[in-house]
Length: 337
Ligand SMILES: NC(=O)c1ccc[n+]([C@@H]2O[C@H](COP(=O)([O-])OP(=O)(O)OC[C@H]3O[C@@H](n4cnc5c(N)ncnc54)[C@H](O)[C@@H]3O)[C@@H](O)[C@H]2O)c1
Image (tube, rainbow, N blue to C red; front, side, top):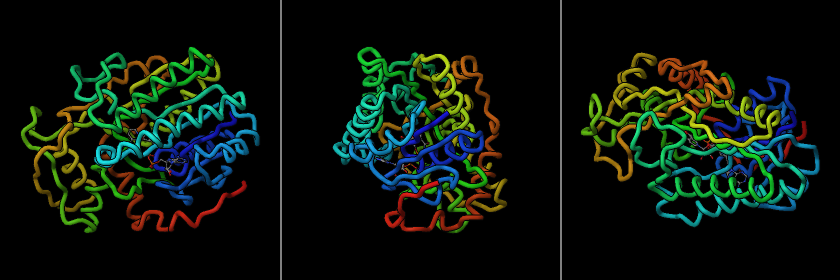
């Protein structure tokens, strides 16, 4: 396949690019490096630095090859920031995505894989969460993603744009080459491991009186490499069938914050300091995906379902790359293959 990966210098995008090129696909990456890292992009991919909202830039990219499918990872995804600056979130996550789709349609590219999120569901009534659960996002980030899913459905009806929305739960872990390096980091596993490395004093645990076995929140952690594989299966399905769909994407198994800490202590051999803090508004007690649909329809099966394996991969990467990608992203340039 010829695949255009928008946001391919980010955490999940770069892991997907790595898997795509390893499987022999031709990959072009676009990323404005607002949150990503040029060093994360596989050297076997062509890399163009630019913004998906920049039509002249996107015209150049889209006319450079005949793309079978576009994977769209670009977004801002900090829940707290989305509350204080919703303009920024709707602008990038909705308007930015619309600009991408408009450019795609102008170049006759009509297949898209979209990075959606469990946040579109808000506080779930049923756990594990099926695809049919009501969409009741509790913050602007989740609402921007739900709005874009709706937009994609309307584009199918009006323009025949076929899309697959993959609603990730908590991406975690690392491949041999790429790992998680957000700034600021808000995800539990890298925070726990940074604490183990001595980079943070302690892990803050938000809430200890949830109705869960140990009182802390439960989340579904999915290895980034398994997420990447789901993108390849989704793209192949879309190209073969030309049918759009939506899939929830997690391990289908939840772990509490304390279980993550315990597993991380076992992996690192270090005691990890923690401090309890009040619950955060809008944080559900349990978020676990039903992954039945993607397992059945796309025959996706996680290769790394065990929490300790996920944490081990993140720990290996972090120890090899203690400064992350350690390069000022703004200085990076487009790179030809
Ligand atoms: N990480 C998770 O656990 C998780 C969970 C659910 C959903 N998601 C979604 O998955 C996607 C990828 O997440 P991630 O953790 O890899 O994020 P990330 O920030 O590491 O990657 C996003 C990439 O998109 C780029 N980008 C953003 N806006 C752009 C624009 N307008 N033009 C060009 N490039 C742009 C950034 O520079 C970055 O490299 C996001 O859409 C996110 O909302 C992530």
